[in-house]
Amino acid sequence: QVQLVESGGGSVQAGGSLRLSCVASGYTSYMGWFRQAPGKEREGVAVIDRTGSTSYADSVKGRFTISQDNAKTTTYLQMDSLKPEDTAMYYCAADRRWFGAGTRGLLSRLQGADYGYWGKGTQVTVSS
Image (cartoon, helix red, strand yellow):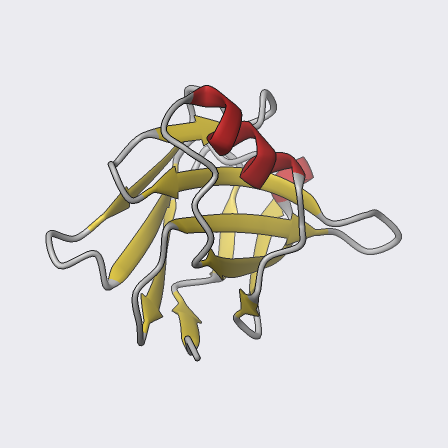
């Protein structure tokens, strides 16, 4: 079992920054950040694998950065240049399965929401 606890959400004006954190209680192969806005489907935002490789949704490339601490127990999502369309509930997710090193595995985790473990979410609101 892996328990995930997110923190760091809040309200910010457009152009501002927030950093989300997710503390995981056990070993993981992938850590992902997803978001869901009202009336929209959940979408993958960023993912990091156990080698430290990352992948991002096109909508956040160049603005968001996913990283982990050295112990790989905490995963961060640094969000800069925030836009109103980034407003959503953000969820941390963990997967213990390994899909292989490289782009293929990362993309499968960015596009797939079949993670084994999910946090409860943290709200991010960006005002114009």
